[in-house]
Length: 451
Image (cartoon, rainbow, N blue to C red; front, side, top):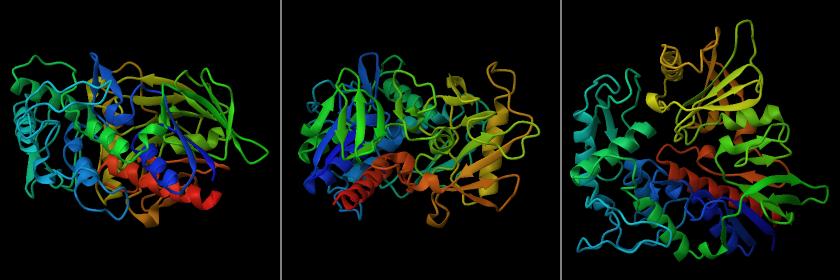
Protein backbone atom coordinates (compact mmCIF):
# COMPACT_ATOMS: atom_id res chain seq x y z
CA UNK A 1 0.00 0.00 0.00
CA UNK A 2 1.43 3.35 -1.07
CA UNK A 3 0.77 6.75 0.45
CA UNK A 4 -0.54 8.99 -2.34
CA UNK A 5 -1.54 12.65 -2.28
CA UNK A 6 -3.85 14.06 -4.93
CA UNK A 7 -3.85 17.84 -5.28
CA UNK A 8 -7.27 19.02 -6.38
CA UNK A 9 -10.70 17.47 -5.79
CA UNK A 10 -12.00 18.03 -9.29
CA UNK A 11 -13.23 15.28 -11.59
CA UNK A 12 -9.69 14.13 -12.48
CA UNK A 13 -8.59 13.97 -8.85
CA UNK A 14 -11.76 12.26 -7.69
CA UNK A 15 -11.60 9.69 -10.49
CA UNK A 16 -7.97 8.89 -9.73
CA UNK A 17 -8.72 8.73 -6.03
CA UNK A 18 -11.49 6.19 -6.55
CA UNK A 19 -9.21 3.99 -8.62
CA UNK A 20 -6.28 4.16 -6.21
CA UNK A 21 -8.45 3.64 -3.15
CA UNK A 22 -10.06 0.58 -4.71
CA UNK A 23 -6.56 -0.79 -5.32
CA UNK A 24 -5.77 -0.50 -1.62
CA UNK A 25 -3.63 2.63 -1.51
CA UNK A 26 -3.70 5.25 1.25
CA UNK A 27 -5.23 8.21 -0.59
CA UNK A 28 -5.55 11.81 0.57
CA UNK A 29 -6.98 14.59 -1.59
CA UNK A 30 -6.14 18.18 -0.71
CA UNK A 31 -8.56 20.75 -2.09
CA UNK A 32 -7.92 24.47 -1.69
CA UNK A 33 -11.59 25.38 -2.13
CA UNK A 34 -14.32 24.89 0.48
CA UNK A 35 -16.22 22.42 -1.72
CA UNK A 36 -15.17 19.49 -3.86
CA UNK A 37 -15.94 19.30 -7.57
CA UNK A 38 -13.16 21.43 -9.03
CA UNK A 39 -14.27 23.51 -11.96
CA UNK A 40 -17.76 22.09 -11.75
CA UNK A 41 -18.09 24.13 -8.57
CA UNK A 42 -15.10 26.40 -8.83
CA UNK A 43 -16.25 30.01 -8.88
CA UNK A 44 -18.27 31.84 -6.29
CA UNK A 45 -20.19 34.73 -7.83
CA UNK A 46 -22.57 36.81 -5.79
CA UNK A 47 -22.49 34.18 -3.05
CA UNK A 48 -23.41 31.42 -5.49
CA UNK A 49 -21.36 28.49 -6.74
CA UNK A 50 -21.01 29.21 -10.46
CA UNK A 51 -21.10 25.99 -12.49
CA UNK A 52 -18.68 26.43 -15.35
CA UNK A 53 -16.74 23.22 -15.23
CA UNK A 54 -17.66 22.32 -18.77
CA UNK A 55 -19.45 25.52 -19.70
CA UNK A 56 -23.16 25.98 -19.27
CA UNK A 57 -24.30 24.19 -22.40
CA UNK A 58 -21.80 21.37 -22.39
CA UNK A 59 -22.45 20.80 -18.71
CA UNK A 60 -26.04 19.86 -19.48
CA UNK A 61 -25.27 17.82 -22.57
CA UNK A 62 -22.07 16.22 -23.78
CA UNK A 63 -19.98 16.06 -20.62
CA UNK A 64 -22.79 15.28 -18.23
CA UNK A 65 -24.36 12.77 -20.58
CA UNK A 66 -21.03 10.97 -20.95
CA UNK A 67 -20.41 11.04 -17.23
CA UNK A 68 -23.85 10.05 -16.04
CA UNK A 69 -25.51 8.22 -18.94
CA UNK A 70 -26.57 4.74 -17.90
CA UNK A 71 -23.87 2.98 -19.87
CA UNK A 72 -20.48 1.76 -18.77
CA UNK A 73 -17.90 3.62 -20.87
CA UNK A 74 -14.69 1.84 -21.69
CA UNK A 75 -12.94 4.27 -19.38
CA UNK A 76 -14.38 5.91 -16.33
CA UNK A 77 -16.54 5.07 -13.38
CA UNK A 78 -19.94 3.44 -13.61
CA UNK A 79 -22.50 6.20 -13.03
CA UNK A 80 -24.58 6.04 -9.88
CA UNK A 81 -27.72 7.87 -11.03
CA UNK A 82 -30.20 5.13 -11.79
CA UNK A 83 -32.86 7.58 -12.92
CA UNK A 84 -30.66 9.58 -15.25
CA UNK A 85 -31.91 9.94 -18.82
CA UNK A 86 -29.59 11.69 -21.26
CA UNK A 87 -32.51 12.57 -23.51
CA UNK A 88 -34.26 14.67 -20.90
CA UNK A 89 -31.43 15.75 -18.69
CA UNK A 90 -33.12 17.10 -15.61
CA UNK A 91 -31.66 19.93 -13.61
CA UNK A 92 -31.75 19.41 -9.83
CA UNK A 93 -35.51 19.13 -9.60
CA UNK A 94 -37.57 16.08 -8.77
CA UNK A 95 -40.48 14.75 -10.83
CA UNK A 96 -42.81 17.29 -9.21
CA UNK A 97 -40.52 20.21 -10.08
CA UNK A 98 -39.58 20.61 -6.44
CA UNK A 99 -35.98 21.56 -5.89
CA UNK A 100 -33.94 18.65 -4.60
CA UNK A 101 -31.54 19.44 -1.75
CA UNK A 102 -28.02 20.36 -2.75
CA UNK A 103 -24.90 19.56 -0.71
CA UNK A 104 -23.73 21.80 2.09
CA UNK A 105 -22.02 24.99 0.89
CA UNK A 106 -23.94 24.92 -2.38
CA UNK A 107 -26.97 26.95 -3.34
CA UNK A 108 -30.17 26.03 -5.07
CA UNK A 109 -30.98 27.09 -8.63
CA UNK A 110 -33.24 30.07 -8.98
CA UNK A 111 -34.54 29.52 -12.51
CA UNK A 112 -37.35 27.06 -13.11
CA UNK A 113 -35.90 25.77 -16.37
CA UNK A 114 -36.03 22.03 -15.96
CA UNK A 115 -34.85 20.29 -19.11
CA UNK A 116 -32.17 20.49 -21.73
CA UNK A 117 -34.77 21.24 -24.37
CA UNK A 118 -35.86 24.34 -22.49
CA UNK A 119 -32.27 25.45 -22.16
CA UNK A 120 -31.58 24.91 -25.85
CA UNK A 121 -34.54 27.09 -26.74
CA UNK A 122 -33.51 29.76 -24.29
CA UNK A 123 -29.90 29.89 -25.42
CA UNK A 124 -30.58 29.73 -29.14
CA UNK A 125 -33.27 32.40 -28.89
CA UNK A 126 -30.85 34.62 -27.03
CA UNK A 127 -28.08 34.03 -29.56
CA UNK A 128 -30.33 34.66 -32.54
CA UNK A 129 -31.62 37.83 -30.96
CA UNK A 130 -28.29 39.54 -30.48
CA UNK A 131 -27.39 42.63 -32.48
CA UNK A 132 -23.97 41.91 -33.97
CA UNK A 133 -24.22 39.14 -36.51
CA UNK A 134 -20.63 38.32 -37.25
CA UNK A 135 -19.15 36.36 -34.34
CA UNK A 136 -20.49 33.01 -35.46
CA UNK A 137 -21.51 32.65 -39.06
CA UNK A 138 -24.27 30.06 -38.72
CA UNK A 139 -22.07 27.55 -36.95
CA UNK A 140 -23.68 24.17 -36.47
CA UNK A 141 -23.50 22.84 -32.95
CA UNK A 142 -24.41 19.29 -32.05
CA UNK A 143 -25.62 19.00 -28.48
CA UNK A 144 -24.43 15.57 -27.48
CA UNK A 145 -27.01 12.86 -26.87
CA UNK A 146 -29.90 15.23 -26.38
CA UNK A 147 -31.11 15.33 -29.97
CA UNK A 148 -29.76 14.12 -33.30
CA UNK A 149 -30.45 17.51 -34.82
CA UNK A 150 -27.89 20.28 -35.04
CA UNK A 151 -28.70 23.58 -33.46
CA UNK A 152 -27.45 26.65 -35.28
CA UNK A 153 -26.11 29.39 -33.04
CA UNK A 154 -25.33 32.90 -34.17
CA UNK A 155 -23.49 34.50 -31.28
CA UNK A 156 -22.36 38.04 -31.94
CA UNK A 157 -21.41 39.25 -28.49
CA UNK A 158 -17.74 39.94 -29.02
CA UNK A 159 -17.29 41.49 -32.49
CA UNK A 160 -15.78 39.91 -35.57
CA UNK A 161 -13.82 36.84 -34.57
CA UNK A 162 -14.54 33.88 -36.82
CA UNK A 163 -14.49 30.43 -35.27
CA UNK A 164 -14.22 27.42 -37.56
CA UNK A 165 -15.85 24.11 -36.68
CA UNK A 166 -16.29 20.64 -38.07
CA UNK A 167 -19.93 20.78 -36.95
CA UNK A 168 -19.26 18.73 -33.85
CA UNK A 169 -19.06 21.37 -31.19
CA UNK A 170 -18.25 25.03 -30.88
CA UNK A 171 -18.63 26.69 -27.54
CA UNK A 172 -16.54 29.77 -26.68
CA UNK A 173 -16.56 29.70 -22.90
CA UNK A 174 -17.14 33.28 -21.84
CA UNK A 175 -19.86 33.98 -24.37
CA UNK A 176 -21.72 30.73 -23.93
CA UNK A 177 -21.71 30.86 -20.16
CA UNK A 178 -22.95 34.38 -19.85
CA UNK A 179 -25.45 34.22 -22.67
CA UNK A 180 -26.80 31.03 -21.18
CA UNK A 181 -27.08 32.63 -17.76
CA UNK A 182 -28.69 35.76 -19.15
CA UNK A 183 -31.14 33.90 -21.34
CA UNK A 184 -32.32 31.59 -18.59
CA UNK A 185 -32.68 34.53 -16.25
CA UNK A 186 -34.69 36.41 -18.84
CA UNK A 187 -36.98 33.43 -19.21
CA UNK A 188 -37.45 33.46 -15.46
CA UNK A 189 -38.24 37.21 -15.57
CA UNK A 190 -35.07 37.92 -13.61
CA UNK A 191 -32.57 40.69 -14.03
CA UNK A 192 -29.36 39.88 -15.88
CA UNK A 193 -26.25 39.28 -13.84
CA UNK A 194 -23.53 36.81 -13.01
CA UNK A 195 -25.37 34.28 -10.87
CA UNK A 196 -25.32 30.53 -10.79
CA UNK A 197 -28.20 29.13 -12.79
CA UNK A 198 -27.26 25.66 -13.93
CA UNK A 199 -25.53 23.88 -11.07
CA UNK A 200 -26.42 20.44 -12.30
CA UNK A 201 -22.95 19.25 -13.09
CA UNK A 202 -21.43 20.30 -9.79
CA UNK A 203 -24.32 18.78 -7.88
CA UNK A 204 -24.06 15.48 -9.68
CA UNK A 205 -20.28 15.31 -9.35
CA UNK A 206 -20.62 15.74 -5.58
CA UNK A 207 -23.30 13.06 -5.54
CA UNK A 208 -21.13 10.73 -7.60
CA UNK A 209 -18.04 11.25 -5.45
CA UNK A 210 -20.01 10.69 -2.27
CA UNK A 211 -21.61 7.49 -3.54
CA UNK A 212 -18.25 6.20 -4.73
CA UNK A 213 -16.77 6.68 -1.26
CA UNK A 214 -14.00 9.11 -2.22
CA UNK A 215 -15.54 12.27 -0.73
CA UNK A 216 -14.46 11.15 2.75
CA UNK A 217 -10.82 11.22 1.59
CA UNK A 218 -11.03 14.89 0.61
CA UNK A 219 -9.58 17.49 2.97
CA UNK A 220 -10.98 20.90 2.06
CA UNK A 221 -9.37 24.31 2.48
CA UNK A 222 -5.80 23.04 2.16
CA UNK A 223 -3.57 24.92 -0.27
CA UNK A 224 -0.44 23.10 -1.45
CA UNK A 225 2.35 25.52 -2.30
CA UNK A 226 5.31 23.32 -3.26
CA UNK A 227 6.18 19.71 -4.09
CA UNK A 228 9.62 18.26 -4.69
CA UNK A 229 11.19 14.85 -5.29
CA UNK A 230 13.56 13.79 -2.52
CA UNK A 231 16.68 11.64 -2.56
CA UNK A 232 14.92 8.77 -0.79
CA UNK A 233 12.40 8.36 -3.61
CA UNK A 234 9.63 10.27 -1.87
CA UNK A 235 7.81 13.51 -2.64
CA UNK A 236 8.02 16.32 -0.13
CA UNK A 237 4.79 18.32 0.11
CA UNK A 238 4.55 21.78 1.61
CA UNK A 239 1.04 23.11 2.29
CA UNK A 240 -0.11 26.32 3.89
CA UNK A 241 -0.35 26.06 7.69
CA UNK A 242 0.82 22.43 7.63
CA UNK A 243 4.10 20.73 8.45
CA UNK A 244 5.93 19.26 5.42
CA UNK A 245 4.85 15.71 4.60
CA UNK A 246 6.37 12.87 2.57
CA UNK A 247 4.37 10.80 0.08
CA UNK A 248 5.20 7.90 -2.21
CA UNK A 249 3.57 9.74 -5.10
CA UNK A 250 1.75 13.00 -5.77
CA UNK A 251 -0.85 13.51 -8.47
CA UNK A 252 -1.28 17.13 -9.56
CA UNK A 253 -4.64 18.05 -11.08
CA UNK A 254 -4.63 21.83 -10.69
CA UNK A 255 -5.01 24.06 -13.77
CA UNK A 256 -1.80 24.21 -15.76
CA UNK A 257 -1.56 27.99 -15.56
CA UNK A 258 -1.10 27.69 -11.79
CA UNK A 259 1.85 25.29 -12.06
CA UNK A 260 5.22 27.02 -11.75
CA UNK A 261 8.78 25.80 -12.09
CA UNK A 262 11.28 26.13 -9.28
CA UNK A 263 12.93 29.02 -11.13
CA UNK A 264 9.78 31.14 -11.43
CA UNK A 265 8.17 33.71 -9.19
CA UNK A 266 5.13 32.03 -7.68
CA UNK A 267 1.92 33.71 -6.64
CA UNK A 268 -0.04 32.84 -3.53
CA UNK A 269 -2.34 30.52 -5.50
CA UNK A 270 0.41 28.83 -7.50
CA UNK A 271 1.83 25.35 -7.07
CA UNK A 272 5.60 25.12 -7.44
CA UNK A 273 6.98 21.85 -8.80
CA UNK A 274 10.61 22.32 -7.90
CA UNK A 275 11.83 19.64 -10.32
CA UNK A 276 10.44 21.42 -13.35
CA UNK A 277 12.83 23.53 -15.34
CA UNK A 278 11.69 26.80 -16.83
CA UNK A 279 12.13 25.24 -20.26
CA UNK A 280 9.83 22.35 -19.40
CA UNK A 281 7.09 24.26 -17.68
CA UNK A 282 6.43 26.50 -20.69
CA UNK A 283 5.39 23.72 -23.11
CA UNK A 284 3.54 22.14 -20.22
CA UNK A 285 1.33 25.20 -20.04
CA UNK A 286 0.91 25.17 -23.78
CA UNK A 287 -0.76 21.79 -24.08
CA UNK A 288 -4.40 21.85 -25.08
CA UNK A 289 -7.29 21.49 -22.71
CA UNK A 290 -9.09 18.55 -24.14
CA UNK A 291 -7.92 18.18 -27.70
CA UNK A 292 -9.30 21.47 -28.86
CA UNK A 293 -6.70 23.00 -31.10
CA UNK A 294 -4.97 25.65 -29.09
CA UNK A 295 -2.15 27.92 -30.03
CA UNK A 296 0.94 28.94 -28.16
CA UNK A 297 2.32 31.84 -30.15
CA UNK A 298 5.95 32.75 -29.65
CA UNK A 299 8.41 35.00 -31.40
CA UNK A 300 9.86 38.41 -32.08
CA UNK A 301 11.61 39.82 -35.12
CA UNK A 302 14.87 38.02 -35.92
CA UNK A 303 14.11 35.12 -33.60
CA UNK A 304 14.30 32.04 -35.78
CA UNK A 305 13.63 29.48 -33.07
CA UNK A 306 11.48 30.83 -30.23
CA UNK A 307 12.42 29.43 -26.85
CA UNK A 308 10.10 28.94 -23.88
CA UNK A 309 10.54 31.58 -21.22
CA UNK A 310 12.08 34.20 -23.46
CA UNK A 311 10.47 36.83 -25.66
CA UNK A 312 6.68 36.90 -25.71
CA UNK A 313 4.39 33.95 -25.18
CA UNK A 314 0.63 34.11 -25.51
CA UNK A 315 -1.32 31.04 -24.46
CA UNK A 316 -4.99 30.65 -25.26
CA UNK A 317 -6.45 28.72 -22.38
CA UNK A 318 -9.69 26.95 -23.19
CA UNK A 319 -12.14 27.44 -20.37
CA UNK A 320 -10.34 30.38 -18.81
CA UNK A 321 -11.57 33.94 -18.93
CA UNK A 322 -8.23 35.55 -19.60
CA UNK A 323 -5.18 35.48 -21.81
CA UNK A 324 -1.99 34.67 -20.00
CA UNK A 325 0.77 36.88 -21.32
CA UNK A 326 4.33 36.06 -20.35
CA UNK A 327 7.25 38.39 -21.03
CA UNK A 328 10.73 37.11 -20.24
CA UNK A 329 9.47 34.62 -17.70
CA UNK A 330 7.30 36.99 -15.69
CA UNK A 331 3.64 36.14 -15.30
CA UNK A 332 1.40 39.09 -16.04
CA UNK A 333 -2.24 38.24 -16.52
CA UNK A 334 -4.08 40.54 -18.89
CA UNK A 335 -7.81 40.12 -18.67
CA UNK A 336 -9.64 40.31 -21.96
CA UNK A 337 -13.27 39.76 -21.04
CA UNK A 338 -14.52 42.12 -23.70
CA UNK A 339 -13.18 39.97 -26.49
CA UNK A 340 -14.58 36.58 -25.61
CA UNK A 341 -11.21 35.14 -24.70
CA UNK A 342 -10.84 31.83 -26.45
CA UNK A 343 -11.12 30.35 -29.90
CA UNK A 344 -11.75 26.64 -30.06
CA UNK A 345 -11.04 25.38 -33.53
CA UNK A 346 -12.05 21.82 -34.24
CA UNK A 347 -10.77 20.94 -37.67
CA UNK A 348 -8.51 18.32 -39.21
CA UNK A 349 -7.08 21.13 -41.34
CA UNK A 350 -4.26 22.28 -39.10
CA UNK A 351 -3.17 25.03 -41.45
CA UNK A 352 -6.67 26.47 -41.36
CA UNK A 353 -6.81 26.15 -37.59
CA UNK A 354 -3.49 27.91 -37.17
CA UNK A 355 -4.52 30.73 -39.48
CA UNK A 356 -7.83 31.20 -37.66
CA UNK A 357 -6.13 31.37 -34.29
CA UNK A 358 -3.44 33.64 -35.61
CA UNK A 359 -6.14 35.93 -36.95
CA UNK A 360 -7.73 35.97 -33.51
CA UNK A 361 -4.45 37.17 -32.04
CA UNK A 362 -4.03 39.83 -34.68
CA UNK A 363 -7.52 41.01 -33.90
CA UNK A 364 -6.32 42.08 -30.47
CA UNK A 365 -4.09 44.70 -32.05
CA UNK A 366 -6.96 46.87 -33.23
CA UNK A 367 -6.60 49.76 -30.83
CA UNK A 368 -9.06 48.43 -28.27
CA UNK A 369 -6.39 46.89 -26.12
CA UNK A 370 -3.47 48.85 -24.72
CA UNK A 371 -1.74 45.94 -23.06
CA UNK A 372 -0.44 43.85 -25.90
CA UNK A 373 0.86 44.30 -29.42
CA UNK A 374 1.53 41.13 -31.41
CA UNK A 375 5.22 40.61 -32.18
CA UNK A 376 6.62 41.55 -35.56
CA UNK A 377 7.29 37.95 -36.57
CA UNK A 378 5.21 35.08 -35.31
CA UNK A 379 5.63 31.33 -35.28
CA UNK A 380 2.29 29.76 -34.47
CA UNK A 381 2.19 26.31 -32.95
CA UNK A 382 -1.13 24.55 -33.00
CA UNK A 383 -1.04 21.63 -30.62
CA UNK A 384 -3.36 18.79 -31.53
CA UNK A 385 -3.91 15.80 -29.29
CA UNK A 386 -6.91 14.48 -31.17
CA UNK A 387 -4.78 12.13 -33.28
CA UNK A 388 -2.92 9.60 -31.14
CA UNK A 389 -0.10 9.46 -33.66
CA UNK A 390 0.50 13.16 -33.17
CA UNK A 391 0.19 13.41 -29.40
CA UNK A 392 2.61 16.01 -28.15
CA UNK A 393 3.28 17.38 -31.61
CA UNK A 394 3.42 21.02 -32.57
CA UNK A 395 2.32 22.17 -36.00
CA UNK A 396 4.17 25.16 -37.38
CA UNK A 397 2.58 27.61 -39.78
CA UNK A 398 6.03 28.67 -40.92
CA UNK A 399 6.84 25.11 -42.00
CA UNK A 400 3.49 23.65 -43.14
CA UNK A 401 3.19 19.94 -42.59
CA UNK A 402 6.04 19.87 -40.08
CA UNK A 403 5.48 18.30 -36.70
CA UNK A 404 7.98 18.96 -33.93
CA UNK A 405 8.16 16.47 -31.10
CA UNK A 406 6.88 17.56 -27.70
CA UNK A 407 7.25 14.27 -25.84
CA UNK A 408 7.34 16.17 -22.56
CA UNK A 409 3.70 17.08 -23.12
CA UNK A 410 2.57 13.47 -23.28
CA UNK A 411 3.56 12.19 -19.87
CA UNK A 412 5.17 14.98 -17.92
CA UNK A 413 6.28 12.69 -15.16
CA UNK A 414 9.15 13.77 -12.95
CA UNK A 415 10.14 11.12 -10.46
CA UNK A 416 6.97 10.34 -8.56
CA UNK A 417 5.07 13.47 -9.51
CA UNK A 418 2.23 12.95 -11.99
CA UNK A 419 -0.27 15.18 -13.76
CA UNK A 420 -3.87 14.51 -14.77
CA UNK A 421 -6.77 16.64 -15.87
CA UNK A 422 -8.51 17.86 -18.97
CA UNK A 423 -5.27 19.49 -20.07
CA UNK A 424 -3.81 16.02 -20.60
CA UNK A 425 -6.85 14.55 -22.33
CA UNK A 426 -6.96 13.28 -25.87
CA UNK A 427 -10.75 13.39 -26.05
CA UNK A 428 -12.91 15.88 -27.89
CA UNK A 429 -16.23 15.15 -26.22
CA UNK A 430 -16.14 17.17 -23.10
CA UNK A 431 -13.78 18.47 -20.50
CA UNK A 432 -15.34 16.44 -17.71
CA UNK A 433 -15.00 13.24 -19.71
CA UNK A 434 -11.40 14.10 -20.50
CA UNK A 435 -10.62 14.87 -16.88
CA UNK A 436 -12.15 11.59 -15.76
CA UNK A 437 -10.27 9.68 -18.43
CA UNK A 438 -6.87 11.08 -17.52
CA UNK A 439 -7.52 10.62 -13.82
CA UNK A 440 -8.24 6.95 -14.38
CA UNK A 441 -5.33 6.39 -16.74
CA UNK A 442 -2.79 8.12 -14.50
CA UNK A 443 -4.12 6.27 -11.45
CA UNK A 444 -3.41 3.02 -13.27
CA UNK A 445 0.07 4.28 -14.10
CA UNK A 446 0.72 5.22 -10.48
CA UNK A 447 -0.50 1.84 -9.25
CA UNK A 448 1.74 0.06 -11.75
CA UNK A 449 4.74 2.13 -10.71
CA UNK A 450 4.21 1.71 -6.98
CA UNK A 451 3.01 -1.87 -7.02
